[in-house]
Length: 67
Length: 280
Length: 218
Image (cartoon, rainbow over all chains, first blue to last red; front, side, top):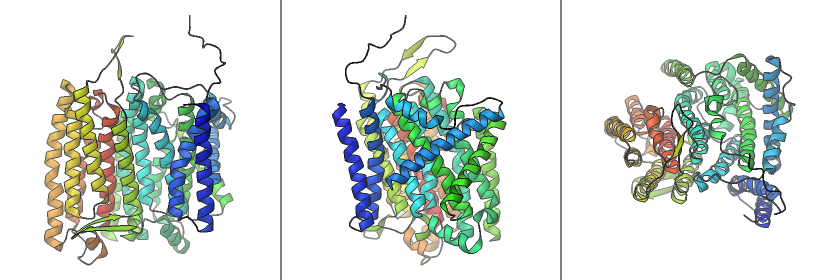
């Protein structure tokens, strides 16, 4: 996965969670939908965030392959 | 709500760190600092990661997402006062998720960890009888109804001490380094976690943190009733330390013995609740 | 019924056959769906085995026709599971559960290894035997109360089903689900193909989770 794609997914998931939570608090979004968004977006967002910040820049050393 | 989830995850990881510290102190070691598990999660999340060549790729990655998702559901169920059955279902399902972790990699160690998780799930299923006890006493399985019942009649712990004991045993069996943690015992390297490294392991640690919070929180809500937040956190810490003592002072059982002990307890409880059902 | 799996969100009626979605059944249904999708899209892993007592290891390959058959069986198992999760009719429930049992035997029996075949044969016998209490339980409920609808049984309109019905249903599900009898059998896991093996244990767990609700409701 590209580094920018991962960041995009993470941001998208975060935005979806925040928007749905705000919507549920304001009464515009049914709470069950907000919960569903949270369940789907929290794991995906977490992993995407990890992928984003662990992804290489293409400038790393060649890993040590052993003797 | 997202803030609560992150908070619950970090607090759960902190509790796991305290768990390690207490075990180490009992065993006469200095032990890692209590925030070690949080650092662990961060460290793993920065590592370069890939999927092993032998693994079933989609399952290998997908199971990490499922693992976090089911505990988000569990958190929401406890928070919103949903059905206790969903919560217990997720406790059982976590075993299947461990099974998936183990089998998806193709590694023999992971596979043995996965097999052991299903064995221990089979012995935990009868602990569902404590659900029957709760229905008999409170007449409902919705956590909101149970807390309402407790507001009138006092803690469920006093009315159903044996059900609480069964749940405590479930908590104990889900703690790492405990007598029943055969799924990650050292003779099979790291059990089901063996092949999940880097960000996948970080995802698993997030799941573990959330799991620890939800397990302890749900125990308090179901058996002690609704309490102020500070009390809940203090009680979670207390229960966690008691679990750490239990883990530190008992040897890890052999898989056969672990299943036998759990099954015997479950069988005894089944008889107790059948008798209770006849009396009530 | 409201107090067991949460208040029902939605009813779907096919004549007198009722499908209902309570938070509990919806959660189980979605889980079955997720794992079925995983079984569809993921390919089996290449299992690595250690030669006992040595440092040598070997990889297992899974051939395509076998993989196709097991995938088909897993999907069928997932569909049966989803049906068993949401149905509001006792007979439909037993039918779906027995279908889960058949699919589980299929998933395992497709592997052409002696030990796995032995395990599948024994499991098949248990699953066959378990259909007797399973359907018997539903039949007793119909005979004593005159209805098979869980909603009617749960609301007290038709009166609670006799205790023997519940006992028979639990016994039947325990036999159909692989978990209690065969979880410990290493032969089951000598078979490569993680997504399909997981479907076996997962479906047995799900039908067990559902039968807890059914038994507490009726």
